[in-house]
Image (cartoon, rainbow, N blue to C red; front, side, top):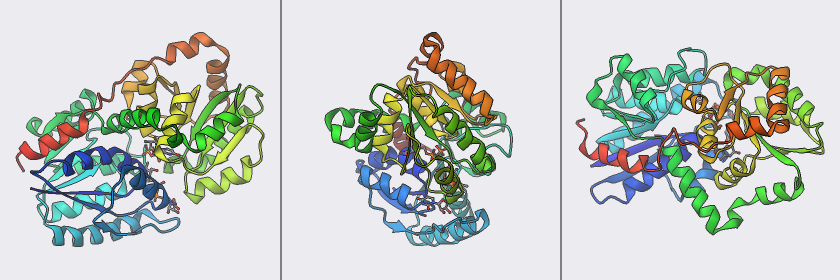
Length: 371
Ligand code: UD1
Ligand code: UDP
C-alpha cells in the first residue's frame, strides 16, 4: 500500500514526522513524502532534526505570499505529484493552506484522504483565519478522520461525519514532544541556543513568547508594546523566537531590539523550543501547537487569542485566554509571576492531547480502514 504524506509548514512537519517514521518502519507500506515548502527555513529545520528527505519538494514559498496564490500553486503542483505517485492514501495534517489544497487535489482524483488532527473547531470562521474554513472543508470529504481528542471527535459527529470513519488517536504532537524530550536528556547539546539563553537569564524567570497568527497581524504593535512593558521587570528574561513572517519580524525588530532582558532570536530548532517550554515559568503565545505542548510539560500558557479550538487545556486549567489587550496580558502575567499559588494552580502537568502513541494508531488505521 502506498501512502503519500503532504505538508508545508513547521507545525505540520512536527506533527507528521512521527507518522512518517511509523509508516516507513512498516514493511506493508510504501511511504512517500511531498513538501509544498509553504514555509522554507522553518520547515527545513524540522526535516533536518527528524531525518526526513522528501521525495518531492515543490519549493512554493514566496516572501509575503498571498493565500490565493499559495493555494492555487499548491493545488496544481500537488495534483501533478498525485498523478505521478497514484497513492492509495493521501495524509494531511491540520488546517493550513497546504493541507487544504492537497486534500482538494486528492478529492479531485478520488484518492482517499486521511486527516490527522481532525475535528478542531473554534466555531468562528474568522478565528483562526483561514484555518477554521480549511479544516471544515477537509472534513467534508476525508475518508479517515484522526481526531486528537473526544471533543474533536464529537465536533465531527455533530457535523454528520460517518462515525465509522472517526477515530480518537491522540495528537501526534505529544509523540514528537515526548520523544524529543527523551532525546534532550541523552544529548544536552540539542538544547543549542537555549543553553546560552539560560546562562544569560540565570536567576530570572523565563517567559517564552511566540506570535504569528494572521488574524493577529494587526495586533503586532500592541503585542510589542506589551512585551516592552513586561521587559521592564528586572526579575524576568523574555525569550522570543520570532516567526519568519516579515509582517511579524519587521514590527518586533523595530520595537523590541536591544532590550536588556528580552532576547529577540531566530526561530528555534524543535528540540531547542522543547527546552524553552520545559524551563519557562510561563508561555505567552497565539500558537496552536504550543497550547498542546505546554500543558503536557506543566508550563502555564497565556493564549493571545479571543477564542480557541483547544478547550481541553483551558478546562484542565493550564491555559487561559487573554486576547491581545495590553493591560489584560500584563495583569495575568504579573499574577503568574507574583502569586505562587496562581502559578502552582496552573502548572500541573496534564496530557489532554495524547499518550505519545498516536502515530502508531494512525498507521494501523491506514492499513485497516476502508478507502
Ligand atoms: C502558516 C499557516 C498557519 C500556521 C503557521 C505556522 C496557512 C494559511 N497558515 O501561517 O495555519 O499556524 O503557518 O507557523 O496555511 N516565511 C519565511 N520563511 C519561512 C516561513 C515563512 O520567510 O520559513 C515568511 C514568508 O514571507 C511567507 C510568510 O512568512 O510568505 C507567511 O507564511 P505563510 O505560510 O503564508 O503563513 P504563516 O503565517 O506562516
Ligand atoms: N516551534 C519551534 N520553534 C520555534 C517556535 C515554535 O520548533 O521557535 C514549534 C512548537 O514547539 C510547536 C510548533 O512549532 O510544535 C508551533 O508552530 P507555530 O506556532 O508556527 O504554528 P501553529 O501551531 O500555531 O500552527
